[in-house]
Amino acid sequence: MMEGTELRNYDLLLRHDLCIVQEINLFVHYCLLAMPGVRQTQLRRVISHPMALAHCGRALAQLGLDREPVEDTAGAVEMLRANHLLDTAAIASPRAASLYGLDVLAQGLQDESWNVTRFLLLSKSPAKKVFKNSKTSMVIAHRGGSMMVVLKVLSAFSSRNINLKKLEVINSSGAGQAPVMILDVRGRGSLRAFPQVLYVDCEGSIEDPVVKEAIEEIERFSVFVRLLGCYTADTNVYDLQ
Image 1 (cartoon, one colour):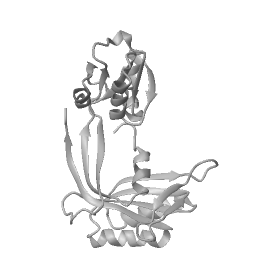
Image 2 (cartoon, rainbow, N blue to C red):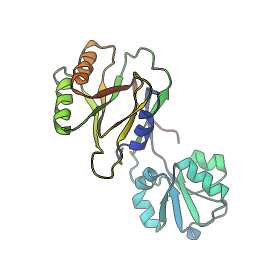
Image 3 (spheres, helix red, strand yellow):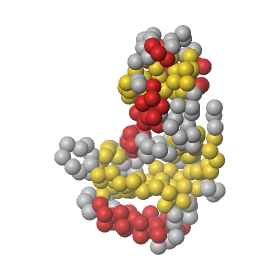
């Protein structure tokens, strides 16, 4: 994974009453797509999701195309087709080219062949009991003292020999920065604003007494803790090309 976390996805998850029920990893395969009959020399710009543009940075620099970010890769393809853009290409999957009847001008546009994207499957209901390759995700909100909270979170897990798979700190307390909005699913169902949050993934199930103890310890010194899901983390990396 080259560009880190797509934080907007977490923001959307936090605003809704949804649970992570599975994790899947896919190899990234990006193609340069254009309207039928358009040649590469006719292109002036390329549109796609910002992450896709970043993943293909070296290839796009060689092509000399202006980059324009849009909402997502499929949306870029739809925009290309709907507006009949003849000077614009889209970066998307081979499957998108097939669905929308576009020409594939180049394949394997990603800078690194090993690039993998993590996908989370969401549901309105929590996953059933998870025993194998289990992972628990949560968001921890606090107000001030970021480093102290991080150290306490690390201690809660390390003292119980629980492996962390992710710990990401978001600090929005600066001037002009919007707070992180989190739906309080255990309260009145209202959105609550927090200036500082931690996204945490740990190995183990919430059914495990040791993991439960760690979460209970964190709840004692945090303002707010919300479990995002306990789920199976598939160790395979799939290729949908």
